[in-house]
Length: 253
Image (tube, rainbow, N blue to C red):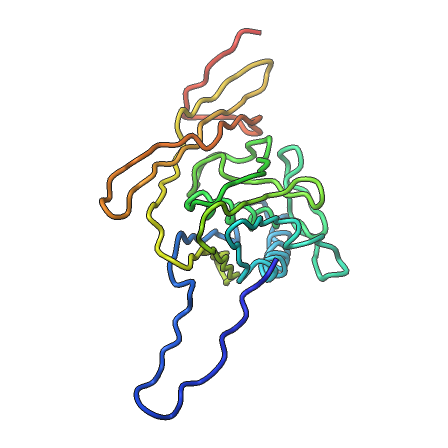
């Protein structure tokens, strides 16, 4: 996948200075994702290592172009996250439980890219969510069900550009947040508001399940009017905690 090359050159020392404007100055969407969360004391080091992995993985994505007709593959862009490449033991979810593994924790980068894509005209071709809901919603910023699962050479996040616009991904790992932005080479006619609907919890066979619809409102940027409401996907996951403060539907055995 091609990356953006830096623009070189200086204006002649005659007349007013020349301002070089990036062709990707039109922001489609931007978002910041918290790097450290309140987890167990034993998981502090794994969170710090996750940040190391995110810095390495983000460098492969920052500046990436998705031109008209092109496809973005997370696995192809980032590659296999091995110790030989500098990746360290991080934290990931397996069957809803936090465990350690080399090069893991980069799903947070995939989550951010997916969230940015949902606010654009890019088409999500392939996306696999986590089949477990591991934590309650305390402090949740994004709607439940927007996350993705990434396993190299097996489970991928794939986006396709079916538009006439060239998009550019921008990723930065700061001290507190993983910051992402999706830019475009021209103004976009629509904006999107992603939200969750039909949230439900079910209890069956001694286990709890959660379902919802992930939807997005389509807004005409010129008029500010809503011109559509699209179903993105329906989610269903096994809940790994005891739901409290919510209505629970009891299903017959």
